[in-house]
Length: 169
Image (cartoon, rainbow, N blue to C red):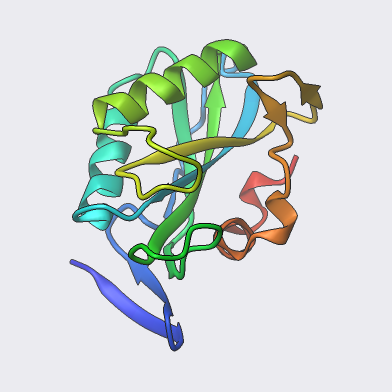
């Protein structure tokens, strides 16, 4: 069941059984890394795809655990604006994966969900960005943490704020 709450002309919050989500179960200590992932997409039934993503992540219990998720935030695109509105959410995960392995896992997951990279800011089925990894700062060509410009994007700050204090580093 989906509930939609409009917050502006082209912005809305969408609530589903898994968005927002908070676990109340203890997480084994081996999942020692706190990670926040930004989730986005704007092709097809994105809300359904986000729900399927949560099921997919839960199947990878040896690699990660989902701690919390935000509601889904529908908002206009930026950059390349001649495309449908985006749906965005944030996920707080605990993981055993190192940052580079987590990046590979995210890219593999995007491909599994039909992501094709045609040009910068292009429409996409699923986009997974590592926003934070513990308190680390990483500056590599292929991975930058914290994610650049995260604090200037409502597509990140709104869901992150709605997720509450559970994600705080």
